[in-house]
Image (cartoon, rainbow, N blue to C red):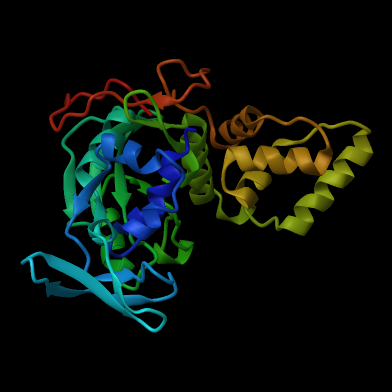
Amino acid sequence: MNRFLDYLWPVMDAPVPIVAAHVVAAWPAGVHQRLLDLGFLMQAADTDRVRCPECQQHFEEVIARTGPDGAVRFYVLCPEVLRAEVPALARRQWGVNMTAITDALAAALRLTGNLTTLLPNRAWRLGRTIWQNEPRDVVLARGLNWKDASSVRAIITRGRKPIVLVPDTKPPNDLWRGRVPPILALSQAATIGEGGIDLDPLELAATILDADKRTNAPDTDGINLDRLKLLIRQQVKAEEKIGITDDILVAAYRQEGTVREAAAFLARTTGQEISKDSVHRALQRAGGTATAVLNDESSPSVVRSRPSARGRKKKPTNPI
């Protein structure tokens, strides 16, 4: 299993990034411990409100009582058993360790410059990269769908053509009031590798290319799902073979949100094997020649993390 992070991103995207014991108990075996070992979760203060350990049907405030032996025990009121004792483990909570996660992301992307907090607990400048011979800031942000998201947006847009990472949920385009930056959901592109976080370079490159193309040509985006399926059927019928054009490959990416899901959608629609590399190459052609995601521009392998450090070289050496 290499989907441990699937359980982390929704917690990180929550207003209070803390996970309770009853939630952890429902995770697959090994997930919680792996996230603790990586330092991405850390123990937080015990909660004063828990799910009833007897009936599992309601949440109640914990009541502390000192017994005859001087030991403190905890209970909740329950309509079925009147008073249910709460085990110590049921009060445990774990919080997201943002320092460990931001360090791991900066290392995985091989960014330069200092990692800085732009807005406490909401936005971080992870560092800077070189994309198509141009420096760009890489930012991690939480809560871009919350009511106060405009304050986070204002800070992000001060950066140098920012590339924005979010844990799980992308914000609506109208948040930005102008140029929409590349926005990559970590839930779509991040997995755990040997040393920490691995990022899928095709997803990252596709996100940047598509956002930049939208900025330069905003009138070329409008193909909805029904129209896209019609175009595919017409093209296949006309050619009597599968010859998917770049326009359809790019439209599928925009419809599905990731290169992997776009390839899967096209494969289902056409009945043929279509790789995510095909989608990525179409995005490259649509947006111009992409700077290497890794040292080798043709490599499909993931970007791998390495031991993190707050101080990094000032001169960019490894572009995204």
